[in-house]
Length: 448
Image (cartoon, rainbow, N blue to C red):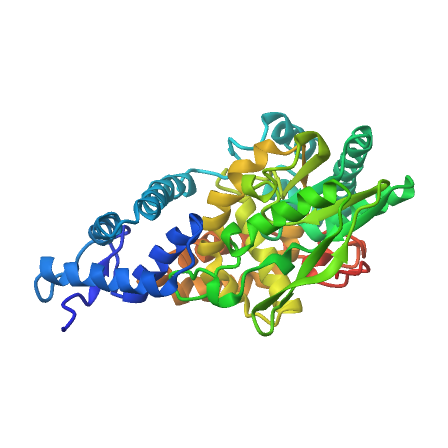
């Protein structure tokens, strides 16, 4: 039967081409959230949704996205998938809240981050005359860039040192340390630095690479553009992770799986691992704070760290530079250096990264035992040199594209900010073991 629906009205009012696969992907994502992994069934249900759309709307009609989602809920319930429907409804409600949150004036007013932590960083920024772009520019013009780097690195190192001290205080009961945070918050470097500090104190560690717990690629949910979603916790075999963590904390041996990113397949029971009595397990993961990740582990046996670049700097309009924008640029640079990934692709897909972290990562940061800020005031002028021209191009490129509204808004916002910043091309004052080297390159640390 001919499909009458050719276009859809998005919530923004933009009219975009209708794509049945996006309906199937949305159904599958909801199913994965409740433990389902049947893509064929998702496709069948999507076809049922399209059938109802064709019955309900006339040729040439353009339904609103809310109309389609209402029908998806109806089809799920009528076909006996109440749990999936509930998850789909919940996702819609949370998506509305996320859109509202994204539209607020600034991201520094984050109710999940303790005010004491934000106040400490703001107080530090004011004391060092780094609380506004204007003051940053003035210090750069006065030839103080190297000093800004030194001051910024000291603030971060103080956080890492305090985290190490807090871990040592609880060593009698601890079995594992989880370093969590959204994309490009600096988890890898911080994990290495934390390990270095604790080793100097005589403590031993084993690292657990959570990437090996990914499901086979064909079982991953996809985003609305058809790309596989590695950001969701449901891409990981959470029950197996939890089972292995319990056994490791009890001193039992487990066999860690092995994931091949080239083939997108996982092999179970590959690498033996066991924690000795004098060893701690170090876990660097996006989803270390996600409840199901370690739901059966006693609270006193795990120390949970959370990372975010808590930069407290206002642009010339009086708005705080957004932490998510800093991390977007970091990931752009890292992906282009280490993964041969075009920065434009990172920008185009950041909305999906952001959506997942707002749902699955950031809400749990207030459950962390300690929060480390990886934000560096000096990173902003380095970005102005590296990416200002590109953001100007992307702003023009995506301005009239209804499918790239998010990319346009982010490009426009960053172009507006970066063009007010005095650019710095020389990154030689940045230490080789800095968290920033994880993104701009030139690190002296070894990343596995």
